[in-house]
Structures are given as structure tokens and as C-alpha cells.
Amino acid sequence: MEKTKLITPRKLKGFWELMPKEQMLFSSLLSKIEEVFKANCFVPLDTPVLEYSETLLAKSGGETDKQVFRFTKGDADMCMRYDLTVPLARFVAMHQNELNFPFKRFQIGKVYRGERPQKGRFREFYQCDADIIGDGELSLVADAECVNMFEQCFDALGLKTRIEVSNRKILSGFIEEIGQNDHMTDILIVLDKLDKIPLEEAMQELSEIGLKSEECEKIIKLTKTSGKIEEIMQNLRNFCQNQLFQIGLEELQELDTYLKSLGSTSVTYNLSVIRGHNYYTGTVFEGFLKNRKEAVGGGGRFENLCSYFSDKKMPGVGMSVGITRLFDLLLSDGYFDISKTSEIDVAIINFDETLADGLKVMQTLRKNGVKAEVFSENKSFKSKMKEANKRQVKYVLIVGSDEVKSQKFALKDMESGEQISLTIEEIIKKIQY
Image (tube, rainbow, N blue to C red; front, side, top):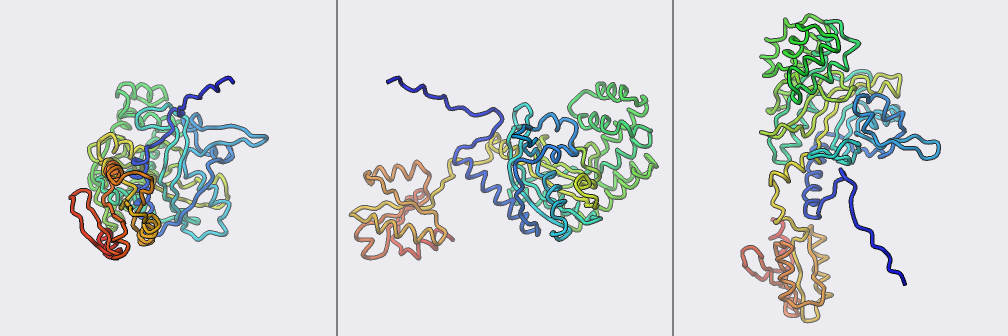
């Protein structure tokens, strides 16, 4: 008989896969972020991975259109979602008569982008999103809530972050003032990559779009403006008298007032923050780990997103933690001690034909929130102790005939080596507290 040729196991490039210990750590981060969302009165939502192409591409544009995974099945033209915000807009438009506004939802899920895989960038990755959608209008308090909640997420993870905030109306107003409204997107694309290309190259690209030399210099100076809100207002109040520009400044100042009321301490203002998506219309922000330049999330205001799916005006604002990139950075920096991660709190080792008793003990512990596991394989006591060490188990509980009779079990601390005899109730209290 001809031997079947084995398939070499391999994974698609850019698609994420973690080892069990890493996955446990990653899942714990997701849980902490979810708790922050719930504490801020956001409700969960889970939209499909696949959407009609006309939905996802309604208002994407730029590089996003080139990155979507798009295909057909029968007559259906579909895309895999590239973010969680456009599907949210579709959902709200479909169910607007059933929802309570402002509608505050969170969603944690995978998204897909067909970009070139590289360090910190994947084709499949998680986003942790929270958005607030208004009915007709939406207070800037919602913008402040999202910025503040972004800060809370990093506090919950025990990470220090800096959040850089801007308002797209400021740059848009200046572009409108110099008569380049028709080239708004092209100009913003150039300004969004100022930190990635030489200044001379940016000036050349802006000149080719149609800006005069002095206009190029002025808009680059504007984009590089950063600091505290008082500095921003002092430097820019008389910079441009365009109405949209001035509205952007006023909104930035109002936002700062609300952020201070909410207790945010990680915010600075930086007009170079633009965000890549075309649907942002006002507040925009990005978050960075201390001493790192890679953005690990952000968000902003999308005043007109739902207009592609409904005649009703439903402005929104949202935030997203780029948890996959964040986790990848933390792993690279050695932030986690993987060796101390274990799926088991207590390993139960039995002998003297007490396997059934060991299983009863295991179930009692599990029902009381203790992660217990019976090492039921037919191996020696010494082998099972080695296995407990290998799996970084904190405690070993020994179940023999004497222990079953007395209902007091030997509990060994595998770190200190201390061994004491306790009842099940005492074991539960010791491990939980």
C-alpha cells in the first residue's frame, strides 16, 4: 500500500497564533478591558465577520479599499470586516427604532486587512472597540468619555500611556481657508505621514497638489503644533480666522474641560494626529505606551458615518485598543513572566486506590473557584510531582486513604516547599485569600 504523503503544517503569513500560556495572558487582558467597558455602562455587541462589500466600502477610501479581503459567493459580493466601526454603523441604522440613545456599545473581535505583514502589523488582529452613537446630536462629553475610557483601559492593564488629541476641523478649516477643499484628502494623507518621510519630500508633495510655498510652510507648522491646551489656544487663536478652524479650537478647549472633570491625566494635544480613516470629522486621538512611538490604539468623532445607511443624522464617537499590536510589543519587551503562568492552581495527586475520592475533591474545589486538576495517569508519585513542577503549579494536594478518612489533606506549596494538613474548606480559603 502506498504511504500517504504527509502535509507540512504551516500557517498563513500575518495571521496570529499564540502558545497556550501566551493565550492565557492575552485572554486576561481582554477580560480586564471588557470589565472597563462594562463599568462605563457600555453594552456588548457582536457583528458578523462578513459584510456586503457595499456596506464596508461605503466610506473607506484611501489604502483601506486596497487592503480588504473581498470575494464573491454566488451573487453575494462580500468583504471581511477591516474594523468594527462600519459594521456598528450598519447595525445602528438597521435597528435605530429599537435602540436607546445615546447608544453605548463595546465589541471585542478579530478584523482583517490584507496589508504586508511586518513587525507589529498583522492581517488578522483583535480590536477592542467602544462607541457612543447619538440621535440627531451628540455632546462632546461623549468624546471625553471615550478618551478617558481609553486611559482607564491602560490603567486596568497596569500600563502607563500618553494620549495625543487633536480635532480634524482645525486642519480642515485651514485647508478650506487656502482654497484647497477639493484636495482635502490628498493633503491630509501627506500630513499624516510627516513623521515617516523627510520634510523636503512632504513639501514637494504638497506643492504638487497645488499649495504655494508659504502655504506649505504654514500648514506644516500648524501640523507640528503640540502642547497643553493653554499653549494650543495661545498659539493658534489668531493663526486662521476660518469658521471651521475656530470651531475646531473651541471644541478642543471644551473637550479639555470635560477631560479634567473626568480626571484624565495622560492627555496632551498634538495637531499631527489625523487618523487614517476618512470618516473622522472632529475629535481624533491616539494612544502610545510611555517611551514608545508605535500607536496602540485611538479613535475619534464620526459625525456623518451613519448617513450612508440612514437619512437620520446619528453622530458617533469611539475608541479602540489595538490589543494585538500592544500584546506583541509587551511580549517583545519581556513585560510578561510566561514561566509563572499556569492553567492549574492545585494539582491533586492520589494513591491507595483513591482516584474517585480525588475527583470528588477536584469538583468541590472547582465549584468554589479553584482551578484544580487530578493527575489521573498511571504514573509514580515522583513522576507526578515532576509534572506539577513542569507546569508551574502553585500547590499540590495529596489524597490517600488516611486523608480520605480524616478529611484533612496534605497541601504542599511548590514555591516555598511548606506542607500543611488542612480541610477542604481551609484549602479553599488559603488559595482564594
